[in-house]
Structures are given as structure tokens and as C-alpha cells.
Image (cartoon, rainbow, N blue to C red; front, side, top):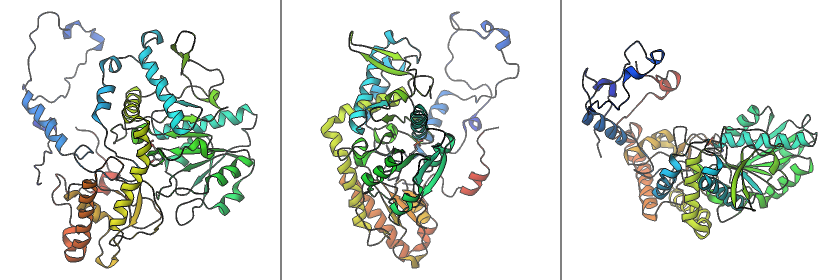
Length: 485
Ligand SMILES: *Cc1c(COP(=O)(O)O)cnc(C)c1O
């Protein structure tokens, strides 16, 4: 699978005067002279000049330098990279949706509002919540929105001034403490036990009437289901705090349990992870926020309301809301994909997602745990963490293993996270992979373990077969060059 490297920028392929197709000037096409003079730029723009085949080949070849879930298995722990069915893309790019202006009057976009409303209702059912807003643009944005909702709830009871603390486990995703801080709240860390679950004895002394909320991710970063949730929720509620559920990765829960039934008051879901939108490199995303009954009025504006009298949908502004966290109704194309996914799966299909995600992860874990170090050998859900190779005498690191996997045609798992172990290798296969794919991946991992013992230099110097082999990660992080000049 040795591939040719296409590493030229299109500017480097440029030759003065080269053009693509020329469109004859029939007098209709807007001419430069027709633009108001104050809008015209003096200096010539520095644009690449290439012929059409060069442009087409450049972009097509570049796309083959990349690795995506459409080209291979992508077992990235914590940030679910499942296969995204193409029907969802087709629905989202339907011209009736794709060409809709965000400020189209409600009367002229009833279909789009129905889509938003239907997805809201589906998420209420899935999360066990009373109401959802789909407006936040990402998981972190959802966390901020959820915490602002909690703040508005406490403020409505005249109780916000003293409730400034948000309790966050030390194993939480980094966005949790960041969102709390952005929301003007004080982050208080609670220690985890060695298996990543909350240490109740460490939690108890933190609970008093200064607590606004506690944020929990479940299953936790190690893929372990937090078994003490009812007790934790009771303790936090007893001191007047609210329970926040980070549902960025809801796969393992689908068909198994609902945050609303476990005592959570507020939650967010990442549609781009759990409900199938291709994502990476920062977007696109959508982080809907759900609340339990009695908190609906605090969700942000605008909101979509169904009017029973004439079966129409309208866009409303609730006076008690926390305000607006986005100009419009959120990232509509991601919402469209999510609803398409939910409807094509059906409730029977969705019920199988959690058990299958868990089965696939457990299958890989059990097939590799003789060669890779499993620091906590408990029941895990949709993902699990190895602490590098079991045989530490080879000197082969998790980074070496991850890079050798690239040679074998796999995207690397998440590495060096969570920070609980030195050589973390976090694997999440997702429910979308076949047994054959899992078996082939297991083979590759076993081959690497054997190579580590017999031919460590091959593993240490990997990757050998990728278009780019050994970029200087540190230089790229310290001194990024993000523009072409
Ligand atoms: C991905 C993730 C987030 C953040 O979501 P973004 O859409 O990247 O902002 C929050 N919590 C957990 C557990 C996640 O995996």
C-alpha cells in the first residue's frame, strides 16, 4: 500500500496565465466594471493560476492523503468515530433544506421546523428529559448552555449568589471544567477511585449550600459504568445542587438506560458523535441540551413550538429564558442527519446500539488482554484502556504502536489519554463495525506485539508506508505555520 505523496500546494502548481474554462462574456455575467469602485481592490489578488485538470487532480489526490472512517477502521476512544450512513448526507443536503436561509419566516419553512421539533421530541424520549434545545453548536457549547440553564434556575429561586461551585471528577473531559469556568462558576475537583468511578468519601465533604451542580460522564473515561449514580444524585440533590450529565458519547446508553431516569436534571448530547455526522478538525457539530420537567422555561431562545389549534410550528421567545446562545436554531444540517439516523434505525435499531457497541469493545479487549496490559479488568462498556504492551522489556511505547498501526491501514486509537496511566491506549470500535473488521484489527495488534519482541526496530521507526512519515509534532505545536505566503 505504498502511496504516492502529493505534497505540493496549489500555489506551487501555479503558472501565470493558466486558466480553467473560459465563460464567454454574453453581457449578462456580472463584469468587474459593474462593481462599485469602493469595493474594488487595487493590488492583484494572489490566487493560484492552474488549468482545470491540474486543479481537479490536485484536490482529488490530496483527499487520498487523508484517513477517514470512509477509508478504514477508526477506533478512536472518547470521541466516537462511527460510520455515518450516506442516506443521512442525502437528507441533509436535500435542496429544500440546504438552500434554506436561517432567517426564513416560520410560515415559509414549516417542514424544517417540523424536523427540529421532531428531533427535539425524539431526544426527550432517548434521554428521559422533558424538553430539549437543539441550538448549541458543539458539546462544549452544550455544556456552557446547560450550566447557564442551571444558573438561571438557581437565580429564579434567589439562590444563585451563594451557589457558585461545580463539582467535576478528575477523570472528566477537559471541556467540563472549562465550560464551568467560562460560565463564571468555580470548579471543584473530586477524586476518582482507581477505576475512574467517583469516590463517594471524597465527594461527601464537598457538598454544602454553595454547590450549583455536579457534572458526570457515564460510562466514565475508562468505559466503566458509574454504579453509584442514584446515591450520588441523592447526595447532590440533598444539598440543593443539580446533576449534569455529559452525554457526548451516548452510544453505550442507547437501548440500555436513560439519564433522566437516573436522577439527572440537565444533560447534553453530541449529535455529531452519537447520531452520525462526519466530524473532525473542529466541526461541524451540534450539542443539544435537555432538562427535566420544571426547568423548560430556562432553556435558551429561540424555540420551536407546535400549535395544536392549526397544527403549525412557530418560532417563539420565552421571557424567562436565559437568552440566546446562537443567532438562530443551531446547526441545521447536523440536526437533519441526526433525525435521518434516528428514523432509519427505528426504535428497534436504536435499542441495539448500546449492547452492540459494548459487545464490539469487549470482543477486542478479551482478544488482546494477554498481550496488552489491562490495568483495570472490570466490565467495560463501549470503550476500554490498555496501558501499553504487557511485556515492558521491549521498550516499545504506545506512540510506537499507534504509528505502526498506520502502516497496517488503521487510524490510531486515542493515546496518552486518560492521564491515569503512563501508556494509555484507548480503543472504541463502535457498533458500526463487522466481526471481520474487528478480527482483522485484532490480528494487526497481535502482529505488532510479536514484532515488538522479535523486530522492535521496525515498530520503533514506524510508520513506513504513510504519505507523511515523521512530522515533528513538537515543532508543529510550538510553531504552527497556518498560512501560505
Ligand atoms: C467530545 C466530548 C465533549 C466535547 O464535545 P465537542 O463537540 O468536541 O465540544 C465533551 N465531553 C465528552 C465526554 C466528550 O467526549
